Image 1: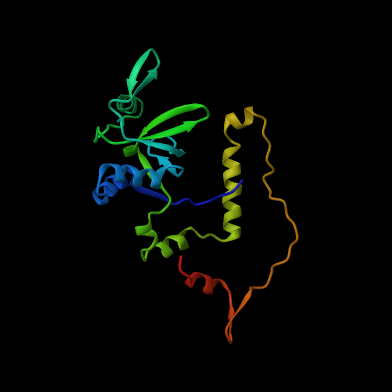
Image 2: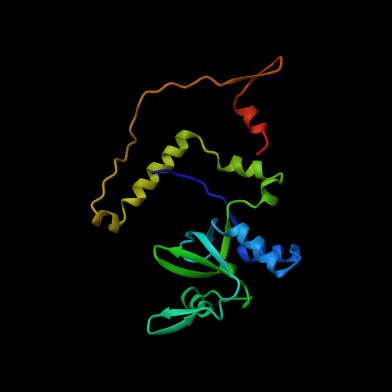
Length: 203
């Protein structure tokens, strides 16, 4: 078990797709650029538990209003499903869809309700990125306490107890050696690579 921080963009994939359309000279070129950017990449759902999915394809010849599938006792559109099930209303009916493969099943997600996974280049290259990284950097002792608190809270849940799972609350202790900081020779100059040097390097 581990405690991690994950950067999650608040920009929807649809916003990025619209931005790419403004830059593309033709419809065909736009579709090529969008597929190149999203196919095979991970996105985050902006509903429910905000799960991560991998994009199998981007569908341009259908949209959330026209794309339907079997649900319960009848057929329902992607737009109506998200409205009824998650109370999320489509604002751009003609938007492309993400094709997501889960096991052997294919699912169609509105790009409007998907978030970019990670940090956009515009933010990554900005002055605030290093500050954001510093906020997520925690000391080993604090990290271990967070993990132990997580284990304690997790195993208070009835479902976990019913599964009869056991995790030792105390971490395994072991002896190890701390290696000295490396040194780099650049020309006639000796550079000692410590934490302060690493922080000054470009991200």
